[in-house]
Structure formats: structure tokens, C-alpha cells
Length: 382
Ligand code: GLA
Image 1 (cartoon, rainbow, N blue to C red):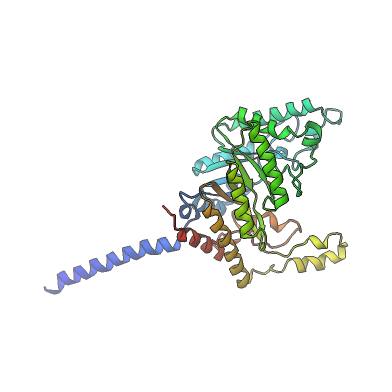
Image 2: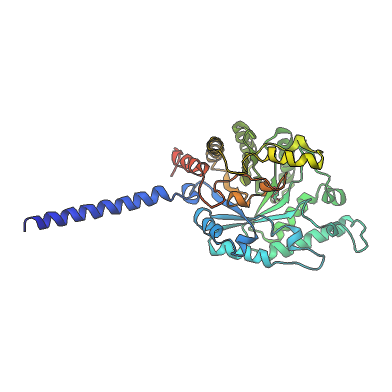
């Protein structure tokens, strides 16, 4: 008889302990990026067609769990959404936006005006002759009105102009520049603003961490702002290497754009751990096979030491992003898991690349835990 209350008490204590452990265990087992950086910045991923159309169910589950923002890897680029002069194809883009709404995510549009993945006809008349300035401006206006207008109020942020600069900071000699002149950039922003006055409008580019290109971007943006052009943010693509950009370069770059009164997005983040292929350009075909093996050293898996180096590298960069959380509004990875990454096929086709936080089975890598840890160490955390 005297044992009974004691037994009940023990039982209650054990259940309480088990409940606490479940909560603790669940917490330590299941950290999420979006929760870790809540109140700091959004955590985004670029998504592909398989994810957009729901064919990659595991990828979608990971996306829903870990991220609160999306970018379209390809489906809003001109060539996909507007393949012929009188034909738009919104099927994939509609699914993309619907997916973002279903998961209550911040939805980004990428992109409106770019030199690449834009069909040749865009710059030509019906006879294949170059368009006049006015005709190309009209075409740009129609495209932006139609695409931005369709998703007005649903896509919150647009990459209006992508990659307008050369490495030395001068304007890239694109068809846009050649036919319209340098004010094509201002016009694109004005048209986008006209189509959705509440959308946030971005200039997006790579290698802005390098001083000559960064200075070119600063000059360009100062000029746009002086003319009253509605630009609100700069996207630093963030296709990074293990040794580039340095932490100091990243820090100085974010600071420089913040000084212009812009928000900063890390818009296409990935970190390439594979050997650089550039010095091997021009090799003949037979040599290429040999080179491919040399350039693809981790085909059978990433050694632990490299996993750890990548984790440290990610942590270093996230410390800089957090330092600037007052201006950094989102950090978007260019893909959900390593298998999705464009770096498996660029600049060399068929390599096995490891640039993201989740492996090919959607499992978190050491880099994931390193990034989560940085969020936890942030002193200014609310
Ligand atoms: C650039 C573009 C992206 C994408 C990547 C590679 O950074 O902005 O849309 O094409 O190249 O995937």
C-alpha cells in the first residue's frame, strides 16, 4: 500500500523527464535555418522545375521546413516566360508563385533585363534587323508590364537588371546597351515600378566584392538615385569560392551599398569546393577526360576535412551577414541541395559539387550546423 503513491510519483517524474527530453531532443535534432535567423533576415532557396511542379517531394519538404523565401532558378527568365514575340508561357511561373504562397514564403522574381537566357529575337525586328531604340524600349516595357503586372502584389521583390557591369566596372556591351544606350537600366526600373509600385526593385550582379566592379556599381547606383530611379536593393550573387571573397571584402561590400541607402540581399549563395577549371581552357578533347578526373576529385564523396573547411567558411561568411542584419534582408542559396546545384555542370559538365548546406539526400552537412551555431552566438539576438 505504501509503495503505491511512491510508484505513481516515480512514474510521473519519469514521464515528465521523458517529455522534457523529447522537447530538448526535438529542438537539438531539428534546428531550422528560417527559425535560427528569424528577425535577422529571410533564408531563401532557388528552386527548379521538379520542385516547382511537386515532382521532388523530398526537396519540397526540405524547402518548406528550412526556408521562408524562394527565387526561381530559371522559370521567370525571358527565354522561358516569353519564348516568342507574341507568346508568353506562364505555366511554370504560375506554379512557382502558387508554391511560394502555399508555403507562406517571400517570393522573388528573377529576372527582367539580362544579356543571357534572352532570345535573339528580342533585339531584332521581323526581318532579323536590329531594333531601333524606341522599338526595343517598347518591347522591354511590354514584357515588364505583362510579367510584373501578372504577379502584382504576389511577387514582393524583383531582380530588375541582372549583370549590367564588366569586371572593370564599366557597362557591359550587351544588346540592351548597344541599342538603347546606358539609360536602359533606369528605364527598366521605371517600367517595373509602374507595373507594381509596391514591389522592391533590385540590381543583381556577381563579383561586386572586387573593388573595380564594386566601384562601377556604386557609381551606377548613385547616378540612378540622383535621377530618382526607384531602386531599393542590391543583390550580391555570392557565387563564392573557398578563398574568395575574403571576410573583409564581404564586409566592405555590404557596408558600401548600405551607405547608399540600399538594402542588401545575398541572392545566389553557394561555395565552390572544386578545383578551378579556368587555366585548362583550350585543352583538346582527349586531354579533357584526364582533366575531368583531376577537376572532379570528390566524385565518390567529400572528405571530412573539406566538409570541415566548408563549414568554417560558411560560418565566417554568415558572421558578416549577421553583423549587417540591419541592411541584409535575405540570404538565398542557389539550390536546395548539392544535387540541384548548377556547379555540377558549370564550368565543367558532369562534376560532383558540394556547394550548399544539404547533401544529395537532403541531409544537413556540417556546414549547416556551423551556420545554425553562428545564429545562436549572435550577441544582439532578440
Ligand atoms: C547567374 C544568374 C542566375 C543563374 C546563375 C547560374 O548568377 O543570375 O540566374 O543563371 O548565373 O545558375
